Length: 406
Image 1 (cartoon, rainbow, N blue to C red):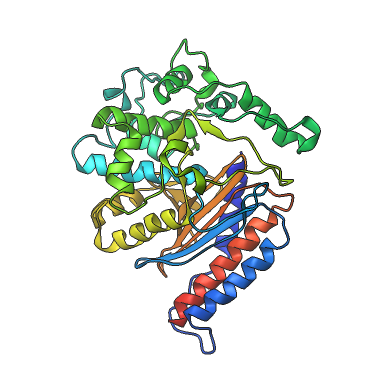
Image 2 (tube, one colour):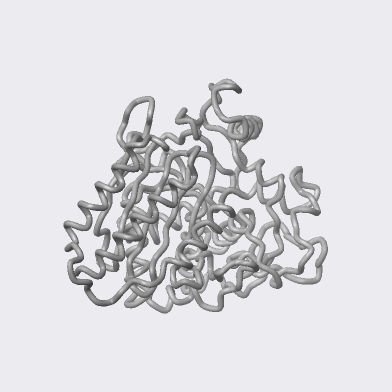
């Protein structure tokens, strides 16, 4: 739900932001001056202490051109948030499922047009439309007819104890953590089977939409995680192994992974409640849908490679492979965007993804015309949600000024 509200917020903003100018504007600051000004603007926002910390990056096809951190990775320890600080990035994680699926398809290990039951060790059948097969493509563009519902909350479990009292943090945020405290971590396949097949303990008829597979867009985290599991079965590699070998390593994402043990402990951010208190660490059973741990620096590397790769290809995919991610997208009802293979495309000319989970907000959008990517991570919630937009607006503004000043 939080991600849906966040996405609408940014879609509306980007829809009115216009496209970057191609020619240099007289009097506009040169790149170094532009970044000095951006840094000052963001520091002013950070000094208000509306949120624990945040990191930003601007990227082009050549790589990361600006990156910085503000505030704290850990408020209690007064550890600074930097561009190398690692945190959960929420649903931006799904873009890696998209790239991995296209890689596996090009390797001849699967097809996006295959029924998922061709690969799965357990059968997934839409209970209202048992005669309509769910295709891998349906999972990738959120038309599979799988609905997260209340049972999806069972995917979250705590790694560290909940030590705050009820009256120490906002009630809604406390209740969210309490629910996690009552859950147990389950391996990905076990959770998916429990959620999607009878008589699984999380199985409900309501886990599926009224519409048949392939007909209507309905965003589903469980569907995304299921796509990653199909890849595991089809390739014979775990999803973490595949992404490390075929994405993280070739794209030089040196401190990125799906679990805490995959990244350096001292680089990790603490997530924070909206009043600044530290939040317990947590993990997702459906980790491919939103559990990637990375920094604005490493994700900037990925984003830059996607920008460049769409033109000339690279170590992860040839240009045709990147084109596959955005080909034949489905229209998102009621919104000014379409959805490809786990990549959003906004009618305003931006593509990317956002993420929102307890204690985090993340944004990764590329202006397709200018070729500038904009990344922002927050490691906490805030009592002043407009602050998210304020930071992103500055990054977007100075991204435009940088491209027109060179």
